[in-house]
Length: 522
Image (cartoon, rainbow, N blue to C red; front, side, top):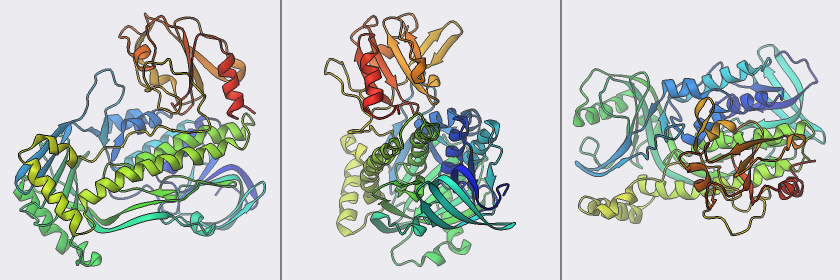
């Protein structure tokens, strides 16, 4: 490490996975010096978390990591589910040409790590990631955290004003603080396999329940870049997990399934692992000067792809708040809202994830019976088929957040209510067409409809006027709840792309009061 013993850093990030590296890039973009400690020697191996949501693409876009991800990734066109040898579900991903990003992109986790790391370097993070280094001791103090680190050069001690634990499901930081995850762990286990094989299939989420190739199992398949298939299949409850991941047991099952679906090109395995679903969370993500994000804070089932995506949302929520506190622009109490909002989001994700898990990997005979009945009905009844498809990851509305400004009831919809993710809109300017979301991700933005917005520069708020000509497709005023394109209104969007408040008219007084009353401004 470049730091010497007893040196001080504003933010020390434990864990150089996709969440830790994205947080590092976001903080660097905000001008906050940070250091990442990662036990591995480099980026992860194997596909791991592979499905990147539209919201996650937006977050990566705030630091310039979206372009390489979009260029490399494969966007979903839809999905298919089969029961035995019958197709029981076919869905298409919602595709709106005016959206900035695809709804879901498949890409291996190590690419996300690489792109986020490059973004942090491009933003000026000179300290970067310290590979092959482990956090071994965490001592919270009044003014920060004293952290003992084992590095290739030997043991070192660093004083951090804040420590953010992004060190995964087996978090050392969590263990050092004596904290326990709470919730449910499921017994059903899935073997995960990456193989290389050329295919002409569309990029769809493919699922088989009780397929002839592997009777009694459930199989998921996703195409990935570099001609890689990701295959997940459930093993029996009586199978030994250590035996289940041995190549001599994995490869025949994979070959049987590939032959069944007509994928006959030569193939070879790349990576094998095993997984079981967990619905676990810490009750609080803030413990003084120590904060938790990603799998260190919560473990969410893979079904519905909420794990990594919720972790990136943690990073997007935390980065701007931590930056404002360290710059003295907001009181320390602002960080409490990070825990409040993200614990709420996790509990929502766990509720959806638990339902999906109980269908994909039934925990007992009653659930298995219910699933088989649903699948049987889905063969002939289209109304039942939607029950088969797990609800995909979506940004959670921060209902009841302490940062939500009070609004009246004169709005036409709740899409842009306080606490909701700010709706996208395609707009037109002097230099051509652009997306409204391209203005989010750095600081507060005041959207001014139907007139010239107020000057709020002294509050660190940028103002963006949306006139009828700018909103030629009438997307913005409709999605933000206005009654017409000329109706005057102000909408305050947070640095993480969430709506903080909206007010009729162009008087900035209630907006200013909201920033003060919610404790955002010191």
